[in-house]
Image 1 (cartoon, rainbow, N blue to C red):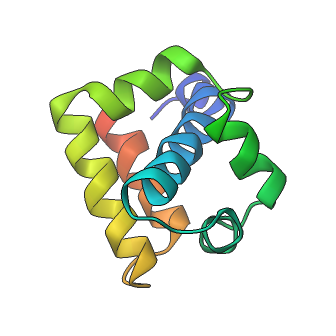
Image 2: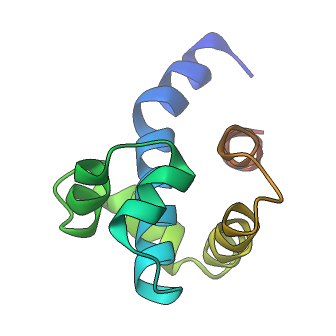
Length: 101
């Protein structure tokens, strides 16, 4: 991956992915904002902002939640994070490779 792709991933993908994971954990799996924040290593206020669509690239978040392939991965990794089977950093790396190869 080129330095430019890494920069794009850091600025665009990571916040959008955190938003997609937070939305999935709260809305689909019923976790609290506080539990979700702890699992994702972010502030509860960030989770609240993601839920209210006040943060991150809305278009990319929608793509991650609505595209059949990406949405399946978001759900799969949300469950893995909840079960402590994978670290958030590993999920970020997976999606970065998936999107930017």
